[in-house]
Image (cartoon, rainbow, N blue to C red; front, side, top):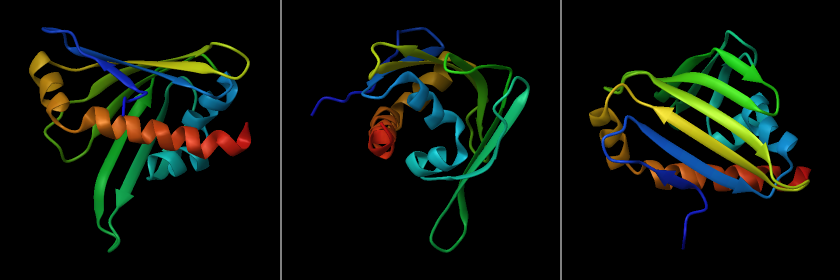
Length: 155
């Protein structure tokens, strides 16, 4: 089955570009990235902090059934324009990956559909390529599918 979330990585570039069309109004798609309860649902993680504002920050954490932390990510938000754009850093703690820069842009296509475009910039081409060797695209597509399913009842 074809993935709805598209990941494009050009040779010799330090970035990837991710696009996904959602059957959701723009405001609802944006809400999926800024409402802690919704973020926790579709990402399957705990939202420890989510300050949706210019110069805000965030922290997410996932634990195994025994309560051991298996994933923690954090970052800062240098740019926040409601229903349009979020620029943030993303750092996975306790991993060899360097901090990355993410540009999220939200676009209204129709009253009931919207487009998310994410540009992720890595410190080096090698780090970007290392990320692409992981089941990154598959995991992102699954997360976006959960986002759509989580918000369908709110349309």
